[in-house]
Image 1 (cartoon, helix red, strand yellow):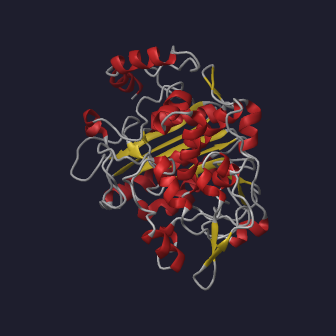
Image 2 (tube, rainbow, N blue to C red):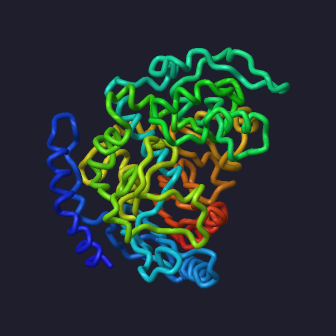
Length: 421
């Protein structure tokens, strides 16, 4: 697998050369060679896993493919910087014969959020963005927000929305799809929540006109917060979001297959769901004006592993530092309280908190990953986590909205049942 991967990556020599030129520009970090795979195989037993127990994951994913529940998936499990288990299952899509691989491109949806949050924190390191500042410092239209009332009216917000509220989903914003029948969700839909014909900056202006579900900083509601953060990042960074992400995160890490939209030339590598839904599974190669900071990236297991290993490396990967250790530590501070967690919807679960872009394990008596684990997932079932307590990391890629929550449960069982020392 490794030799085949390197051969395929070598096809991108022209792209790599272009990237090298870009990374040579002033102000951009020196980059990791994208032609050298991020997947460094290790001996599973030496890494503390019982290899035989990985058979549960293998059997489970093979059974899902055989039953037609998924077209395919890719699972990668590692520890101490090395990969103990990596395997593709099934094919890239219905009617296809190309097997799933580390090069298959997946819509990672909300796994975009941590990437954009890290991009934002690189601006924080430079003093160009302040997480404790009001959003209105960067987006003036957020100075006069209103909060939804039980009778369907709205009243002026009494608290400012801060940048860290956007990063921790405590802004008061919502995702209408979570409770589509709720009056506020209908008001958001009518007000343009689902538009993709606007730029990130234009979209943020639309969202500013919609009523908040709660006062900023008082409730956790999964939301369009990171999409608004994308506009903040553009203003603070002075460039379009895709350029900032590429210059500050994906480019230096050698993530050449990670983008908001993919070129047609890569279409043969696109993963598709067993059951299509055009309203969810957008065409990778048809750009829209909207660069969704909350869910617009697509990536591969090999590419996203570079990002994960940077996080595991305390902000550094192969000598390229993206975040200072203290910056990443700030991202991993819980921004919630019991009251905030109970007041909202869709919270990650018991024993969990939420920082600046990641969910956090606060009590591993209630969660399988160790205390301090930080992670997030996408609506099509993709997922990653970094568990500093056990030094375990994982990347899971699939395109199955129906099974997303089920795979979260099963991945934890498969991985931690196999971790024996």
